[in-house]
Image (cartoon, rainbow, N blue to C red; front, side, top):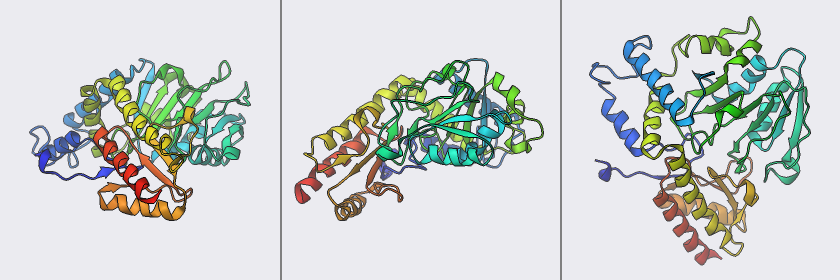
Length: 364
C-alpha cells in the first residue's frame, strides 16, 4: 500500500513528518481500535482500553530512555510555551532566582515568561554571536533554584551535545522539545525535562514531562489545578481528558523507535542524515554557508544561507516544485532551514543534496 502513496520530502520544522508505517497503522485502526468498534479518538479516556494504551506508551518510553523509577512521566497539554510558565510556577520557590542559558529564540521566550513570575539570572546569552553556538562559559548562581536550558534551538539550528554542568545541588531543567528521542539521553542528570511531541515523537497536542519525584516537594499549594505538576503526576495524566489521539500516536512512534534499533539506532540514522547535508554545505566553496558553528550544529535543524535573499527565495520555490517542503527559514531570521527529524529518511536528504548541487551549478 505504501508504494502507491506519494509523500512529500517533508523538511517542516514542526509539526513535522511522522513515520509512514506509523501513519498507516493509525489509518488502519482509525475506525476500530483493537476490536472495540470505536476509534481511539471517540472512546472514553477512563476505559480500560485507553488506560492500557497510555500505560504502554509510558512503559515503552521508560524502556527506551532507561528512565529511573523515581521519575514521573506526564502527558500534558499547552506545548512547550505553557511549560515556560509552569516550570517557574512549580519549581522555583518564592523569592528564589533561577539561572537560564539563552541560545536562541525559545530559551529567550522561556526567560521572558519566567521573569513575569519572579527573579531570573541569565547565566549566558549568545545574542552577540547571533545565536550560532553553545556557550563556553556560564555565570552560575550556586544558590539558583535551577539551571534551565534548551537542548536544541530550532530557529538558529544550535544543539547542545553535552549537558551544561550546574553547581552542586542546583537541579538541571531542559526544554528538549526538538531533539527528544533523537539520541540516547541520561535522564538521571536532570531534575525535569519536557518535550512538545510535534517534532520527533508524535502530532501536536501533547507535551511530555519527565520529573524527578523529589521536585514535587517544591510545588506550592493552591496553584491552578491544570498548571500543577503534582496533580498531573498524582492523577497519572488523567485529571481531565488528555490529548487522547496525540498520546496514542506517541505510543506508536515508541514502537517504531524500538524497531529502528532504539535510540542508538535512531542516533546513527540522524547522524548520517546530518553529515550528508553538512558535507554538501561545507564542500560548496562558500555558495552555501551554515549558520551554526561546527561544534554546535544541530542534527535536527540545518540552517544555512545563500549569497542573496533572492537566491534563497528561488531555492525554496524551485525545491517546492520538486515536492521538497518546508525549506524556508523561520520568518524572524530568514535564510533556509532543513529540519531532518527522526521520520525524515536518508533518501529525502539524498534528493535535497542532489538538488543543492544542481542549484549551485545553475546559479553559482
